[in-house]
Amino acid sequence: MSNVYRKVDVETGVNGASPHHLITMLFNGALDAIAQARGAMLNGQIEQKCAAINKCLSIVDEGLKAGLDQRAGGDLAQQLDMLYAYIATRLTLANLRNDPAALEECANLLTPIRDAWMAIAPNTEAPASHATMRIQA
Image (spheres, rainbow, N blue to C red):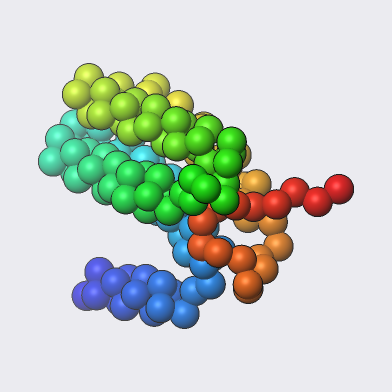
């Protein structure tokens, strides 16, 4: 029953979320999936490990990476694209090699980006792409 409530909560959160909050949810989901994968890996739960890593891969590739606006984001979008590709590679290798250090590396790469994203005040008129953020002096 708990899973049903969690699913409704997530769906409600997505439907009512701003573009900024959606990106935050993607970062948090990826980091949560990494933590789940690490726990499953350390406990020898192969099926759960694979499912959690696949979930994180989907979030990184189909959410964060696909959401980049290469035109508007310029250099930043290109750098994030390369970083997300690297993270996807490391996640795949972590899965194949049962390497918790690779999972930790991915979490360490995503966390500061998530934290910086969260520190930016949401602008309701801004596009959903997180690579179009503007830094003001």
